[in-house]
Length: 413
Image (cartoon, rainbow, N blue to C red; front, side):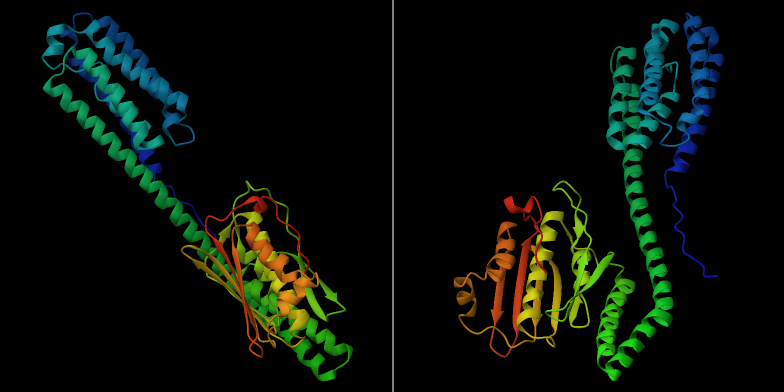
């Protein structure tokens, strides 16, 4: 049995949540122990006792809340920070003013940092900055005036929480990038495995049918031609994984195989689509497609119009360059735009023929190609020399759009 690749996702922030859970328990015990050792020096210990009971129950009951990012909700963070701030502001009720001015600890002590760190791990450095600022304000209110040790502790918590929040954001971005890379690697390995299996079976059979059909002639030659078309399409599929499900029908008048791609209608607000996906079905025995190795994203309506213009150019090749003409499609993803070039090795277009066709009402180039590109903010340039074929260059700026781009139009193939 063939071994298949499986992507295992790793969480780089999960150890931070485990460390935060342990930190909250340890700092709770530290705050209670600090109070117990100085119990006799508290002016009014009962508010502190009530607070530590609430703090203990809250810390232990909410341990599952700091187990992962999904459990740590905004409501929990708000209540948790409120308990920390309440403990700071209740300190003057339990302790004497002299001990507070002498640098005595607040009731929650360093447990407060755990609440701020939860904000950092959950929401990044911006959330950490908000929480640490509120803690700083509460400490200044509790002390009554800024002191060196208070400012030192506030700045330490503020810098540490923001730094941890920033590290968490970077770690999350790195995790997403790594996961995507692993998925691509696994998909590539699986595609290579399928390509080997298909090459050893289906592609060899199609190639044999093409050769035998060409040798026998007649209807068998037509069957061989169709097998050759499907061999090219299948090779494109297994090599790039780009060809969507399609229907294949025969155009009896032109003797050409036309692929009609089943494309779902999309609105302008849909996400970008890969232009390679729309142009891959045009590849065949007499059409060579060259494309970048990475996706070429475009807005759905613009991509459909551009693909329709390419289809119109290939229609002209089939109609006017002859059955044996070859065509080449080149997709280029340049910094300032997307360029698609359709070139053929036909006899070319005689000088003045396009203007004559337009005057006779045949607007294939003027409307199906140039008109489409103009409507979506692009340009279409046609260069043809007698005996040297024809080249159509379609260019779309990266920020293309326009009135005609809101809905794709169905072009004739």
